[in-house]
Image (spheres, rainbow over the protein chains, first blue to last red):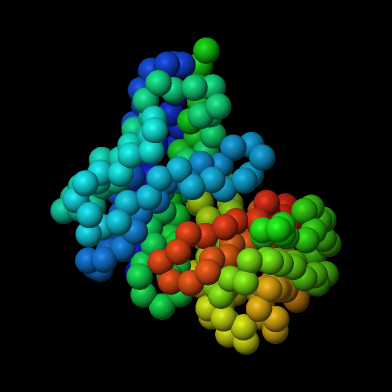
Length: 115
Length: 112
């Protein structure tokens, strides 16, 4: 079974600065997807960025980018020019391509943004 | 187009009571999922369905049952609620394999 580990329960960043959230995963599969989801206090689950394992290029969405290291099974999220609206819980997630296409989530990292 | 709608949004149950959570989607999605979210544990999969009339167990299925009699609805049942089932429950749906999931707004359930 796949597992996802987020070792940072909480992180803080100053507004306009850069922060990196860590995620590692364990799998024996060669083909899969990785995601970062944002959950603000409203509880809504918002997809931030996704990475396909067979693509070597790191995904980027505006101020959000990932550092995907397939051999090390590492998938970190970098948020540049942090804004107050970035404050939320962030979940790293793994999706198998096997039956059910299930998402496996990490425990989450609370990101606080200081003004 | 309402997306994924969960009913109810909040509920308090007494130990031993039963209830059903409803997840409804109007996007004609094949796949539907029920997760629970607990502090320090992220979201864990309870049950899922890959199409009308199908269901399968996830990571934490004990104490729950599900049904998918209609494609648009995925019901999660608690036959005899326990305090350990106090959690926030999320439903998600998606069109098919390797597509993105759409999440409902969550149901906060407290069992006293």
